[in-house]
Image (cartoon, rainbow, N blue to C red; front, side, top):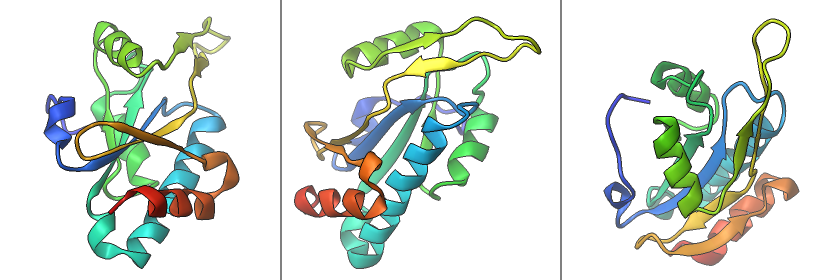
Length: 153
């Protein structure tokens, strides 16, 4: 969202939450991100030193609309450190493939909009980039904070 190119290794030494979605999502993405980031905020309040070790990431699967500026505005609604990432379709395809995530861009609707089907899982990775858990965003912020308690040390 700042226009800089990033890679997975840029986050070495940090825990990472990763969510694939898009800013124009009418329901799932805002709810999942609100719950995940509210859980992170609760964890940060309980453990300020540990909370700072977590880098939340939102990876857009809608390169046609999710510009860096749009991502910056979207992520600011959920957490001050939530970083929005985008790229070309080829880059997004490569990243989603590595994470076993999926997405499909729907047909344009009247007015030019479209929906994007996507995996709606919030992944948690360890400081060496290793997969640790899936955060239970469907159970709310308290469940997310409790899951972070189990893994972040």
